[in-house]
Amino acid sequence: MARPRGPVERKRLHGRSPTKDAAGRPLPAPVTVLPAPEAIPPPPDTLGASGRAHWSRVWNQARAWLCELDYGAAQRYCETFDLRDWMIAAVTAEGLTTVGSTGQPTAHPLIQRIEAFNAELRLLESQLGLTPSARATIGLGEVRAQSKLDEMMARRAKPS
Image 1 (tube, rainbow, N blue to C red):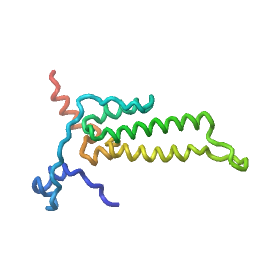
Image 2 (image 1 turned 90 degrees about the vertical axis):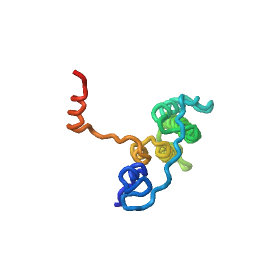
Image 3 (image 1 turned 180 degrees about the horizontal axis):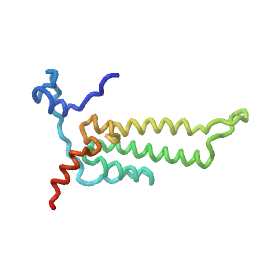
Image 4 (image 1 turned 135 degrees about the vertical axis):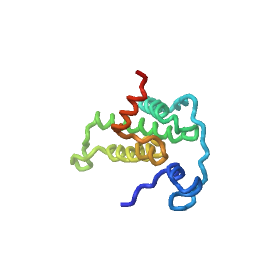
């Protein structure tokens, strides 16, 4: 299995120079920094309760790396959640099975659509940087356990 690609920022930090990686290959030009919104953009009027809750969650948690250009992707993400939640409620109310054309029990037709919406949500989560692997790919924070050395340094840094 191939090793996952590291972010360009890490290659710049550990490379031969700011323009070459450790193997001497040229790195792409630095990325233009887009300003993060100062406030959470208002949710679109088309969103339902579930979509509005996800809108708030996305912009609260990812505002540091999202910008106004990501508005459309965030809107699609939240609209997809609205539709998925509506379908789940319908399947819950009607049951997991329905009667087929010849009277046989068959899976509810919305189940396949829910699975498709879940796949779309995974793709949008990755594009918006809402998963740990997506954040690592774009060079955002790593989650790791605090080592004993980190704990000791934190204790020493605390004023008595």
